[in-house]
Image 1 (spheres, helix red, strand yellow):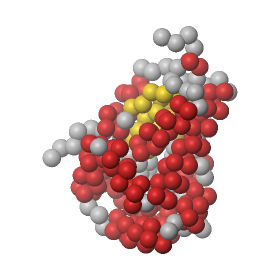
Image 2 (cartoon, one colour; image 1 turned 120 degrees about the horizontal axis):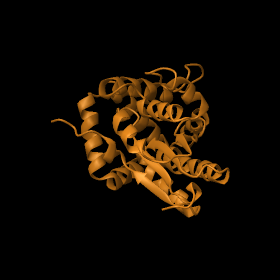
Image 3 (tube, rainbow, N blue to C red; image 1 turned 90 degrees about the vertical axis):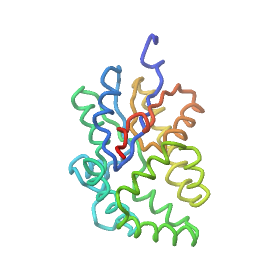
Length: 233
C-alpha cells in the first residue's frame, strides 16, 4: 500500500495504565511492519515502571503529595485489575526489545508537568482533586471497572465531563502533553522512523491524533475499547 514506511500512518494505541492489555496489544502489533515503538513515559517514570512490575513511575524523593497519592492508587488498582500499574508500557517495551526495534520515550518530564498543573489549579479544582485522590485510596476496583465501561461506551462525552469539571487538569495533562508528544513523533518521522506505534493512555488518542494530522501526518488508531477483554459480569 505504501512505497515506504515514511508514507505510512503513525499508529496510536490507546491503553489504560491500570488494566492489563498485554495479550491484545501483542496481537495488535504482531503482524505490523514497524520502525520503532514509542511509549507515554519520560525517563524517570520509565526507569521505575520498566524495572519494577508495580513501580509508580517516580522515586519518592521530592515528589508532590498529589503525585504520591496517584501513584499509590494506580499501584493498588493495577494489582487488582491486571499486572500492576504500567503493564501496557512494559509490554510495549518488551515487544520493541524482542523485535529489535528502538524504544522512544515521548512524554514530558512528570515532575515539571505536575508542578505546572498544581501551580495553575484553581482553588476549587485543587480541593476536588485532593478529595478525589483520597477517595481513590479506598475505591473498590469494581467501581473503577464500571467507570472504564462507561468511558468505553461514550469516550467523547466522558472526556467532556472531565474537561468541564477540571479544565486546568485537562489542559495540562492532556492538551499540552498531546502537542508535545506530537512534536516528538514528528521529529521521529523526520529522522527516518516512518512506521512508529505509539502506546499512550486512551484519553490522549483523540487529541494526539488531531495534533498529528494538523502537522501533516496520517494517523491510524487502535482504541482501548478494541484491546480490553470483555468484562465478565
